[in-house]
Image (tube, rainbow, N blue to C red; front, side, top):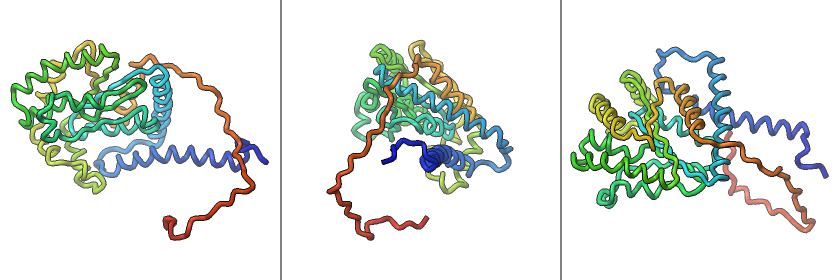
Length: 302
């Protein structure tokens, strides 16, 4: 019987197909980005696009090493992603988590608080999503909703707004003292860029779901959000948990820069693993495979 790990031509072909499938996954995300964008924008050259893909895959391989180190060292990480609507937070979160184990690296994207949660301590509903040892949690928007949308849209009182700024530095210092590494990113785009991305979403039926009435109202209140952002950064940029601003007009550069910066913040190293040996499958001569009935199979239309 042949060794199942023997590098036969058929086996090498299968490995190549698996690698291409990995690349295709990123190309699919790339196509999703391009479908609704302004046709008037200059398109990237083929060489620059391939350079982006090569660098992204390199950084993602480092993220896998980071993940292994986090599990090995029982590290705990919280990464906050904040920014205006359509700033590209979701895109970089996708690229960070794309190759990682969802049991280790998970995303918390909380909806608007329900009636019960509105009566709780403000930070309470976020606390339940904090990581245990060996975990990374990415918050796609966070407790900073109070400093942004809640304040601008009038969903909180002035007293609640001020109490947030009194509480959040102590809350974050407490997280850091407990051993959680807290990283905070603000994704910065221009007025014109947000306008272009919103128009792209309106024209793209695959992205229209991303536009909520709140997003549309945020366009009208651009300047109010600017003032709120400046106040938030000024009052919550603390040594224990500083803000890092990502220039995000160019989506691809923003992703690479953010991931590269994130990796630089963690003293990770490659964790040695014992060599994996694929065991031979046990074959029982008495085993008879019973095929499933034809009606159970999904039609093969493709």
